[in-house]
Length: 535
Image (cartoon, rainbow, N blue to C red; front, side, top):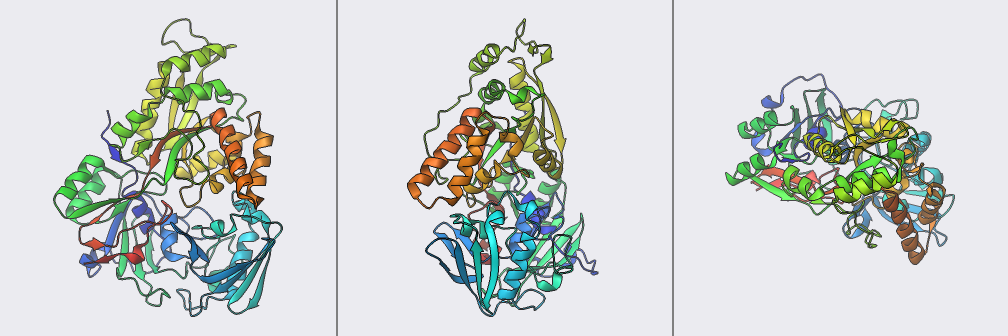
């Protein structure tokens, strides 16, 4: 049995640190002054392209640098770069009153013209944002005056403010960084309005962020955040023990960095603390129903896999119960999701019966099943940087072999897996829901998006009905109608077993014991570093 690991503790932090920008100054992280008052985290991945209007970059890093008009909080949508807003009676016109005195990191003024230019740059590349329904409903952006901007939609769309609050793509970059007035083909810099600015980035080595002294919300008390690129696992643990890094949290891409037992030992010494959020997302396996040449296109096969997975054992043995067993795609604390769907328990006997009834036959116990001359064999893709995904894949591979099914395990970079998801070149792959701040609407919108889960859902008999209901729920102005539509949508995908839930994940932070103000946003992808301070 593999050692218990906590998903992503150090990695997102890593990812955050590898962040944007670059400099000619090649001084090492170790040479930085005031190390006792800075946060240094290890990262297993480069932050990649930090263009906030595209998707390769680290969301955790982008969350420090860029901001949106509004913010999603536990108490609903709150002001951010917009101090207030008005919504027309018909629900098609949103007028935002912008915060005054805000500047980008390069000194450029944040105003209505900057908002218009950024939003239109995103819309000029709308094919990249089809998972966000707002991208297809935003008709016009108008500058009313220097601090007032108006958005007009083609039709009412209730998640408009929710989607405007996301980490990307509707966030704001200095117009000075645009290339030929656009961002779709690259940008010249990474200057946002956020509490931190990137001052140095050496790819695959480290990144350094400094507090924005002109931040409209007040200069953050933690003046410097650095990220050091390290392999996940023992190397990261040793770096923590030596003080080379001092902060880790769940990675936005699911990579693991430190095992739970080692983490607990560190905290027992009194130098570190552990802070954990409420459930944020669901880790799951997406099954490609549209792959007609694969057994995965059959509902009985997908259900058999579901019944073969012992999620309680995964929770206990892989995550030391820092993640809990998930029975449905969304946890009950997600809006509209607590609808009493029928559970599929861990039951290998039921899995075998489903396969036999569907014509998948094995002549003796443990033999690979066949049907019409085809073997019951599929491929399962996992993030090569995630030790927990690899461990889960091996456990699942072993369990399904007992019911006569073969899984070939293939580890790839997360970017490669995302590409497979969008082009349909997979049988099964690990993934996760968007998270508490975005769900259910964002993950559900992705069910129909070519760039996301269209291949996962398009092979089911109810696909046409599913997509129609998704369109309807996004424009519904009636709460009861919306509840009924969400219930129908969730029931369809649950019954077809195209999303096989594994665990409900939280964000876990390992931080210096002297660091105060550690808290969470309504998303697993970012942390509010600007609220933290050393005592």
